[in-house]
Image (cartoon, rainbow over all chains, first blue to last red; front, side):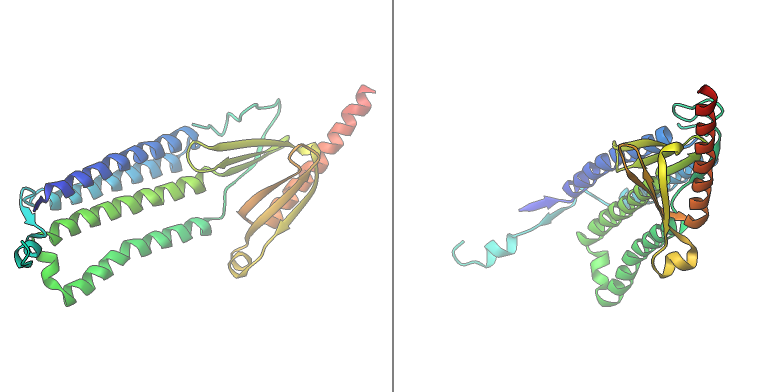
Amino acid sequence: MILQLKYFLYVYYAFLVVWFLFFLISIYHILKFGFKNFTTFFMTFIFIGFALILLFISFNFIIPIDWKVGISIFSDIFKSNPIF
Amino acid sequence: MISINRLPNKLPNEKIIKIIRRDLFILFKKILFLILLIILPLIFFYLLIFSQSNLINGELTYPLIVLGTSAYYLFIWLFFFFSFIDYYLDVWIITNERIIDIQQKGFFSRVISEHKLFRIQDVTSEVHGFWPTVLKYGDVHVQTAGTIQRFYFHQIPNPGPVRDIIIKLVQRKKKEVVKEEKHEA
């Protein structure tokens, strides 16, 4: 059985979708319920900025990987078992 | 957004005396925890390089490590921001007419309560523990004659002076109320 690496990437993308949802929820909360002052805007800016930096660094590592590579799993079990 | 100049249900001649949040040490503890969570994978990878260096370069393991590390750091950054919002959106506002207690209980759950000063009967401050004693933060309990009989200021800086401020404001307000009642009579 060959498992392509891209399926792990799809799981990661699903995680990113959920993460982004909570990201939007947290931005909404601080902007709606926070006081209109420098701290609110500064922390929102820091949060968004660091999140973008983390995503940028992540994709810098993710893009060079060949995700179409397949990994064979369980093949050795069938080869070595005399029944098969 | 809440503006400091626009309180909810603002009363005539109402002025803000003090805006209180939990002590900065509480936020500092969250930041320390975040730093620990950031460092943990780095220690793990450092040990991994020495014991199983081929794992990092493996055809399957390297992509999984990249995805896992990215997901981990994105998660803890989001987690830290949740913690900050939980700290930042809990506020107590003391005015010359009332005390406004704003508590953010997770997401999509916010409790705002007001307690009129003339209904306050008793104010107590408490400081327990080594760090609260050294850094001077603690709780203030306020006993009222209202529906919610007791409410709390949690982990606020300088609870003693805050207690004194509330007591003075309550005494002043009660004198004003008595004067108004005499005037009306």
